[in-house]
Image 1 (tube, rainbow, N blue to C red):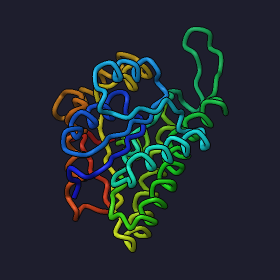
Image 2: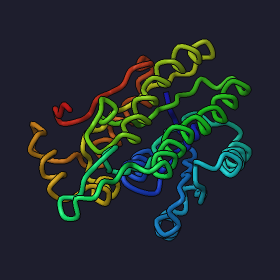
Image 3: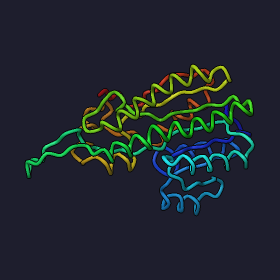
Length: 251
């Protein structure tokens, strides 16, 4: 259970779901740390909410990420909760043919590596650093991995779907391993959510198609996903499972 003495760290906390979560829990805990590499959004947050501790860091860079986590830990003495929210999306099929030029293109190795390095490696980097600190301080904390309904597979999202599927597997594995130390690990799988990531990565007609497929006929609001994460944080019996919050959408 998270309380006024708790310290929470959120990767990808400067925008979308991560920032809504920070706003949701800020007055419920002692300290909230945000790790993000969007300098523009971090500057806006710094101007509007000085209670948050901000780190301008790319989570795919292990050394820089470790330094940020160490700094937050030293300042607060312990970390009670980590939310792995940072992710990027590249929407491109493995192989495609242009309808205009008839030329063939493929998902580049560079794009694949960038998504996997950020989404999967970044989650591993943050989790191993925080989990070790929880164990050393005997903190019965919680690690929450933000996945996606795309983990089941989605056209045009090879690298993204692969990273999120792997994160789901890690969630179950780590829940089994870290429960011995009193640490819960759980995940949440949002459906289509009204955040910059899908809006910038996907075409308008693609987004409209997914909205039509969703029984509720709309995208999720970031605050609705943040509320789901808040539920996981505060429910001490939720462990080793993925909370699907997708408006009824099925891939």
